Image 1: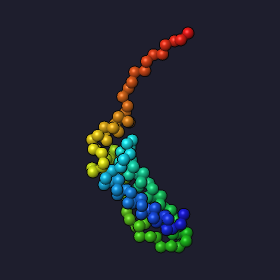
Image 2 (image 1 turned 135 degrees about the vertical axis):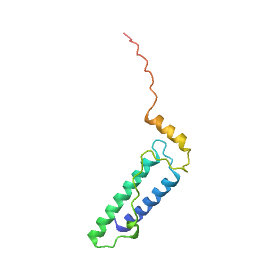
Image 3 (image 1 turned 90 degrees about the vertical axis):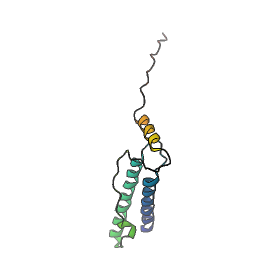
Image 4 (image 1 turned 45 degrees about the vertical axis):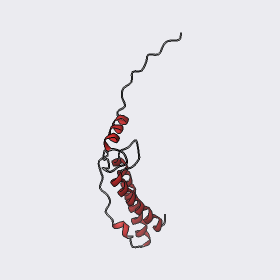
Amino acid sequence: MELETMTKELQKAFEHWKDVYETGCNDPFWADGTNLNLIRNHIIYYKGKLEELCREFHFKTPSVFSKETPVKVSEDFLAADGKYCAKERLERLRRFKNPPKREVPVQLCLF
């Protein structure tokens, strides 16, 4: 990938991380923390690729490269101002991760 593309992708990843951190996301199956850590991994990837490109072609690293990489957050983190009520989302996540046990009926023998 070219330097300009990688720089734009890194900037978009930083903006996406900030947006999810502040307002949450609409993922019904994963907490915001899981998504934040995934975006963080993208930031680390783009920074690594940018560093590699700049070193290989003797370019100066773009200014976005010097932004601090976001810290890893708890996988269960929920944004305070998310679009869903945090309590309801947390309960939905718990049900998804630990579904209620259902009794399986015994099959009847046909022969």
